[in-house]
Image 1 (cartoon, rainbow, N blue to C red):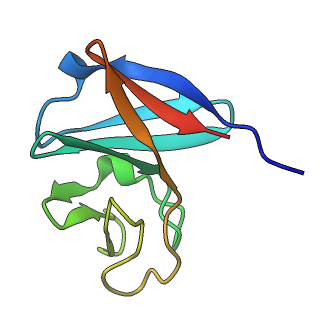
Image 2: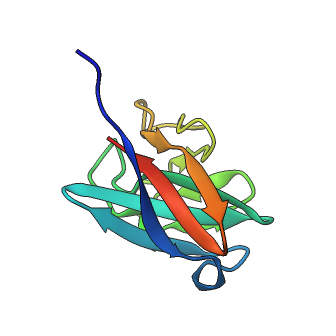
Length: 106
């Protein structure tokens, strides 16, 4: 059995400036959009270590740092770069069409 996915409009490109993050909810999914140097990433928004909202974390070129215990997650792979987080975030494919950002969700 295959899992179906679809592209969902998250926001306009003008809503996500370089160096910023934006929360995006779809069904039960809490997704974080981040713009690092003009490249847009999408990952789960909830830290895999302690259920903290990464949307209130710190964005840098290294990724997003959890506001609770300071684990930093690589936004391309979802892999934590330091402890205490050990499990990766789910990442989502992103595409930009006609000044709109879309996220591929299952």
